[in-house]
Figure 1 (tube, rainbow, N blue to C red):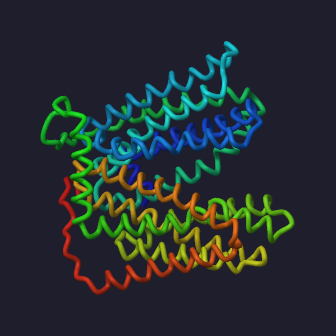
Figure 2: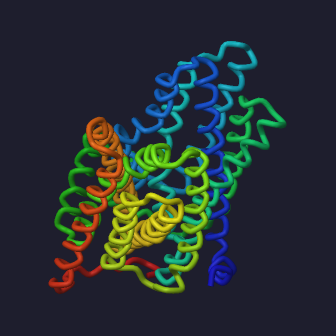
Figure 3: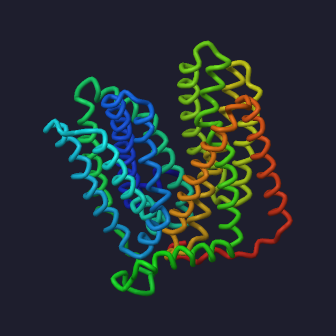
Length: 415
């Protein structure tokens, strides 16, 4: 199935290779930012500041990036952004060679690169439905998610190899090379889709950006499927983020003698299972639906709930397995539904709106549960969050089962 899609559609091959190169560079440079920040300051607070500088831009410009992606030539935008990021990244190498590099250079460059990502990511996601047919998208989405998740496992391994051969500062040189490769591969993609916006982007005004965001918000609110997707996503991410990113490590440290090592082992198990599930999904479901999305969130909730009762290593592996099954089902279903129901002229805004909600929900979750964890045990938080995710999924499944579908997806070219 996968080989057939790539063989019949060369654009998919260029798209996936470009995404893989860009993802690898992002992970390598992300590690370099953290390594150098700690090396310069020896402060966990300042090192956390670099991490914050990589999240904050999406809350500021995430929605605007989607609007711009809908207005302009997406392929040209992606190439330009990749080319801009090359000198921006290499500036850190130059400052280091001149012995002028300091902590604030890291913060500024990190912030600017992520700002460019606010415009790159929605445009990149919006190209995929244009270069694929409807029956191909489930397979291509699965391949894309498999590659990006595989890169997250491969990235740290590559970084270890690089540290043994070159200075950490040249992680940025490596990153610049991946941007060049990405730009070349995007250039190779052939897009014949015409710009469907009603007027030239040259005639747009700044106020039009906010009007466009408001128009999309109204449209999304009135579209049953999109509204359900966004609401459930916010709820699930809110209850999942802290327990998964922070709570799991804390609970392992509290309950096992080698918590950090077990945590790394479980992440490896999780990554392998997610990749396996990603590859299996297109064979099980040719088309994904809101019910399948909610089914995925339900399994994820069961996994989080189960982890609250994990006292032995095998129990942790079982809980992680549930999460590794539920997350890709819900994640791929969400992407598929956005591609299916968003009109071409709203693709950029749709994906940027989705990303904005994810980052916002992440930030709120980390803040709220980080505070609550000071007087409630991690186990109780796992159980509470798991129960809430299960209740939300079941409630929406029952609601949707009672309704007759009334929204017809936008009839897109090549669909």
